[in-house]
Each structure stands twice: as structure tokens, then as C-alpha cells.
Length: 65
Image (tube, rainbow, N blue to C red; front, side, top):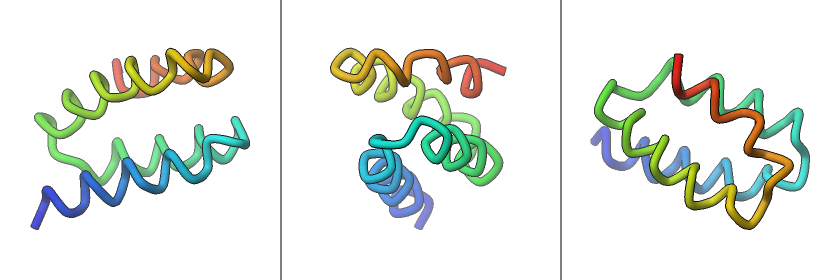
């Protein structure tokens, strides 16, 4: 079940990545809803994903807290 939430979170973040504020809001929601190990996976995925979208790299601190 929780894998589905993680995958859903990635899908949402990809879809809202056109708007930095919306991306930040969804990322904060994700951190509240995911398990600690899922947050680690999300952090790695975000590092990869934001290579193509450097304007979103500033929000990596949210998953590092």
C-alpha cells in the first residue's frame, strides 16, 4: 500500500513541477505522509529529477529536515 503512495507522490511532483510554489507545497505534504525510508527514496529521486529542473533544487532542504 505504501509503495502506491510513494509512486503517487512522484507522479504529483512531476505534474506540478511547472510551478515552483506548487511543487514546494506538494513536497511538504509528501514529507508528512511518507514513511522515513520512503523519504530517503524520494530524496534520491529528487536529486535526479532536479538535474533537469535546477529551479526546483532549492527545495531539496525540505526532504533533508
